Image (cartoon, rainbow, N blue to C red; front, side, top):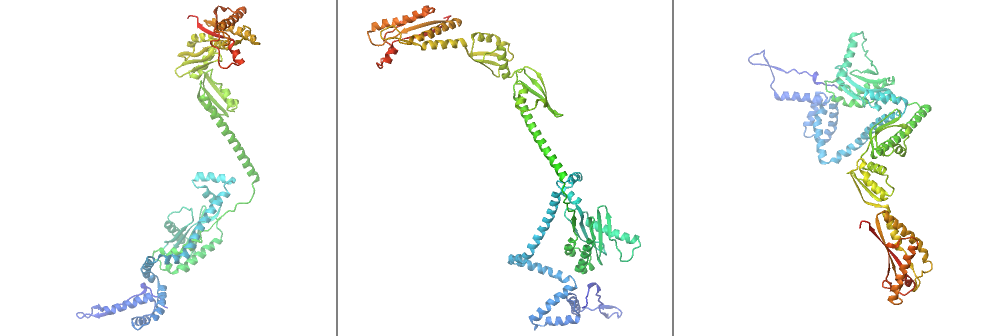
Length: 603
């Protein structure tokens, strides 16, 4: 079958003679004939058949008697013939197909989704699988070398070059990798298609394509090259450029590392497949590169990469050494961290102590240095160091003495200077007022009232809640004497059995109380009262109760007690208990009791 191309058709219009000038020719102005010729040419272009055959076909198409089955038989063949002649039929059908797709989507979206479902699913899975494989390869390479001795060198290289550790691992374990592939039109040198591997930085691909073409032309023009020979490779450091030429296109691959010879076969197969698939597009290339996007799957087959397989050697000694170092570092870090915590706690305790001021701390040469000021009455830093479990040999301290005016230190200083007894509590408030509470000997109380002014930081002394120890003791003896009662027999001044044993204790208490009262400048009055029960007459009971009281005073006088301050009083049965007539109640009513009165001497 003959092929017709628009640029190979030439037409010569018939000429006719002009009436005024027989030598002047004019084109035939026959619109119908001209339209018929143009229609014949168009039919020839679209259907790729001879003119005679076109006429027959045209006659049949214009025949109203033609049957539908005749058109159905001829139309597919005509479309196939038109497709073989070029892209004109496809381009003409694009708007119609697009409108048909839009109309189908508007009517029922499920029709197209069901049609594309078998294609989209596998394509999506393939794309995801490819990305995951590449990610797992990068991750595996990184993990395999993350703890090897070589990895420390690669980590340093990554820090110096600004690359990631994974990128350095891939580059250093790389045998070869095709990073870029160029498809270049051989005649014009224009870039038809370009693909790049992941994580590869690229420059302007059109510029690279032009430079490769220029290099080839330079070599051919500068050296004696046999016809059919071509530049096959270029070497630039770690990069190698492999070139495979075809009749109408050139395939160039940028390779890092040392690629095997088998990769040449991949390049050759790729350029052959592209020529087989796109021979017409390459032949008719006029600068439009979109037509060559279908070559990407072939070019992607060239993006091969191969990495070193880690050796299976067991670095027993290296791993043992690294393990020992790691354990040692862990132990050292633990103890260092613990010591730092203890040191921080020690400093915090020091700063909270009254009378201690920390000025400077530093650490060096395995020692801790600390300096500051300390009141002699403040807590000893050495004791705090022991409480914090810090080795004193690791600490060098320098404390300058000073007088602290903090309330706690002032209270300690007051207790030391006044020699306060243990029964006295001293407290200093923020205003410097010293409060004394508790009890103390009278002499100490008098001395404290004179000496408190000599204590630094004390502005006032208050001892209103401080009791004299002798006065407290005086009250104690007074209470003991008044608690005693002596019981007598019925109607007699004789003691009940065992009652006389109380007399020595009463005598001792009275003597002690009299002595203390005299030392405190107090006068003492004793009242001894006698009682009887309700039996007998009141007159007789008054006499009996007075006799009982007088007997006690006489006994005390016989024991060396000055009874000038004693008064005897008989009250009979007037104050006896009348509740119950039991023997026990009657015994209680037959008694002698004591009453002590303390009177200030100046009164």
